Amino acid sequence: MHNAERLSNQGRRLLDRRFFLGTAGLSISGMALASLLDQDGLLADDKPLTAGGKVPIRPDINPNRPYAPRPAHFEMPAKQVLVIYCPGAVSHIDTFDYKPALFQQHGKKPPGLPAVTFEGPSGNIAQPFWEFKPRGETGKMVSELLPHLAEQVDDFCFFHALTTETSAHPQGENFFNTGFTMEGFPSLGAWVTYALGTENQQLPAFVAINDPRGLARSGKNNFGNGFLPAAFQGTDFNAKHPPANLQRPGRVSAEADRQTVELLQQLNAQHLQRFPGDADLAGRIASYELAGKMQTSVPQVMDLTGETEATLKAYGVEGGSPLRGEYARNCILARRLLEQGVRVVQLFNGSDPAGGNGITNWDSHANIAKTHAMQAEIMDQPTAALISDLKQRGMLDHTLVVWATEFGRMPFLQANGTGRDHNPGAFTCFLAGAGVKPGFSYGESDDFGFKAAVHPTSVYDFNATLLHLMGLDHERLTFYHNGLERRLTNVHGHVVHDVLS
Image (cartoon, rainbow, N blue to C red; front, top):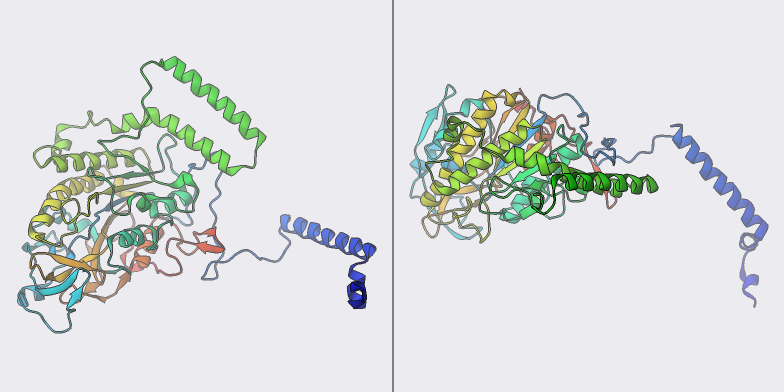
């Protein structure tokens, strides 16, 4: 039997040339009408929705000027953000989270505590290695490990019941800084600059100041752009190592360099005219033009020779360990970048070139009394001076300061008897500056600092609050990627309104 004879009458009709052309014509006409109606806004609202059923807010980004300042979703006092990040997990129970029960149970092993933790068998409860004292008008109990920051507790807003989803450093850094334990997701700084751009068009919108010892465990993922446009990744340099290849070669005169730049601008403009809708091309040109501007702007902002002796002394540039001096210069650089209008500055205190082990970061699995003290000597005075300097200059009125680490440490020692293991169940971070309550503590860990007990706060909640303080709706600031409306807080997170001033 011939194949055509097996078809139904309707099937044979579909093979008819005139019927096909007529149907195709009507279909194309319908598509054209739908397109015209959509352009005029006359179609029903079929915009993509977030996981919470809200319409995303897309920043209106000019491809030719991806760093141009953009309005926030709503008005908030914070216009810039400084993140002071301490890789390795600072022990909350030895710094800011005072637990008298640890002194009472010192050397004992109360029931209910785990026998094995991240790195192996656990030992007995250990009291803090440093004395706690009441500080400031609020009487906040802070240990002697951080005497300079302790003097400023009346300006800080503490989160004492933070929890995270992992007890491994790479995943913990990823989760805190990007909202996901996996790599490849945008960092907080990338989201903020994607949404808001920056005021200074001569400097990067987002600068990551790495520790003098190198990158943290997750490296550039901590300040990467993920799937956001490349223009919004953090530009990393520090006071010791400026961005590479900014210096004009000695064999090239200033006039020749200027003429070369002008010629490149003309050629780029002509090329862009040929491809007016190519956002990637426009973004690349904008990035190269910013690099050209940085040839003069970065050396100026990195030049600390104009800083007073009093400033250098306050930050601790001299008189301590060489690492403290280098970190202090990084802190001064952070202030200078913020002064110039850089939107996001992420300042790292700690690195991980060879596993850390309390030597290059805060990961004190052994001899915590020595290793935490070494890190505190580097971090405490310069960080406190930076926050004080911002306050004295009136910059805290519009700058949000975030002091953070990826998780806490256990209230008991490891089997080695000298170090504390990772604790994802409770840890402490603090905020200061624009939009937050000063001298305030939110949430509590249990009697031992082992688990979050009162107002447990996830990293999702913390990041939602940071975006809110910058005037951004964490549920609606999204980017469509691989079929999903992605956001910093995934499908979780609630703004902690109790900490807002």
